Length: 258
Image (cartoon, rainbow, N blue to C red):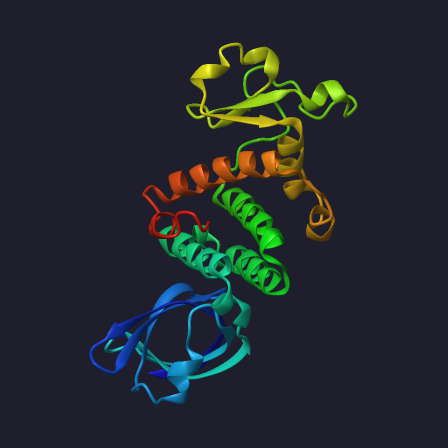
């Protein structure tokens, strides 16, 4: 039996009996685990331990009973704007579902850092920027999972996608995503484009590459058009759902919002 504290992000809170709560906690030290929160509706602690709140969580672990009790929570960030914006609310739920289903990609410190970075950035951003931020999070998370497609070279002929100048002709290029190979194909290698589900233009493939190669503050400065956004969104949503190996409930309930 011992008391300890952790920097933590609350992912999910479920009812446990009439008054108690089963809390899904994410920390960079212990990954994802469950803690029990005791107390009725009037409990101050219950109001603090809410999804997407982050800060220092105080815990009491009973090794004999194999249970962890939440004793206090010093909240540092509340993310209040999530309550007033449907997209932000659903996007934060999506992040929680992804983290839980993939067990934080087996790398709690990295996943904790980018998850909190996205949530904090979304709190300070307008909805449109938050939508683009969600794509950046998914792409970085796929990289932590080790399954992010290579946006630098053709998976068939290994030609560089980014050699040469960014010209008017290059804007018309379409880079096909081969689902079987989980890689992109250059225009010369993708003659029968109709059989493929995803095709990305030069701006999209360049933006996705920048997510992995440029500092986040530099990527945020890049302006893209609606067509490019939709191309990246459809592919990133497909890939993260495939990584979770199941249909994501947040996508189903958030249809038309996400």
